[in-house]
Image 1 (cartoon, rainbow, N blue to C red):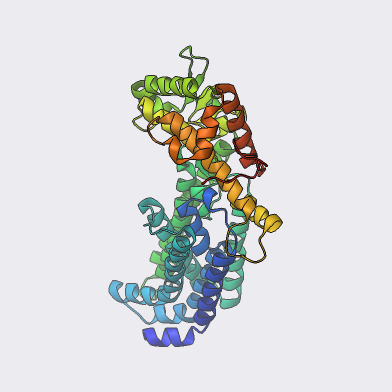
Image 2 (tube, rainbow, N blue to C red; image 1 turned 180 degrees about the horizontal axis):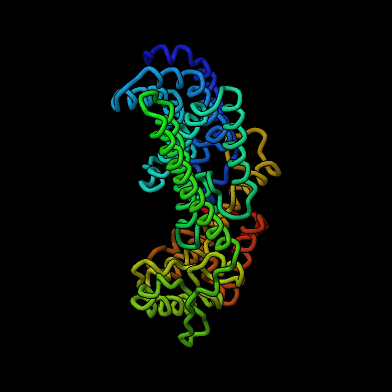
Length: 442
């Protein structure tokens, strides 16, 4: 079976390429909150679309296997020719999948506005997923007639994807879950990664055993042994994947705050961190305590009682999140606190301000309300930055900062709290020294 003949008969490949291009165009058009999306998550969402990856790619491989695979494998003998024929059969779906993956990363870089390389671990896992989809679909095509094979592939692959979207636990086959919804507080959930790997290793094994069973050169006894070995391997791989998924899902659903280690050094704060970060706390805990104390003294604003490395614990308690993994000095702690306090307006807020206050004659320029919101953020940022590092800014270069610093400490702290709350609620706050509450920074 010549390679060119396979491609010329695989007209469905052209339709899939069109679907691929359409998918990426949609990925460029769909609005995404970039600030809350990791590079891996966005790249995977744009490249391995849920239905494209599961239903379309796997079903295409099943169609190739049922249409060409059975006849091709019956005519070959010898390991090398069998492997070469299997690669020819896998080539069309693999090329389509690889094109989706590469184009997806290009889309992600465009959306993020930066160049980056995929994480090696997630890259290898995504390659295993692609191979599993193609071999699994090919295996279904080799084991069943075209009608049942395509029906089974649609039901199994799209059903798996649908389950991954609806299940409250980990996303088993949507790679975006590995970098977002199925991560622990401080990194990817190893249970989810194990479940995904075992699941797609099972599909890979199914394809390999199906190829061996379709080769005429093997005797009946060897085929039966292969069938038994294949069934046992699938049971072990998929059973292990299901157990790993169940364990990871339970871990995701339960609160893990009971695992936090908490310290009370006597400064009125409770410092809670994960067990794996205990060594970092032992090395840099005193610097964190000192940095927070210095910032409270410099700003006159009390930091939250709970200081934690857990995002969930910080949200639940209204606490402040610090990573506890960097080599903190008191100065770096003060700077990190300043950056955490200097909240910035969201794109949704700025868009709303533009709609409400747009200048009709200068549509390309930010509206006056948007400029005031940026001035509010800029002054908030400069005030906190000045508290972290006194020599960072010069009052003489910023009239509003000088006006703010001329107020007494209580008035400064009150304006800072009000400005930060205003940015979070998308409300404009009068700047110090402005006459009508609409003054702009120079």
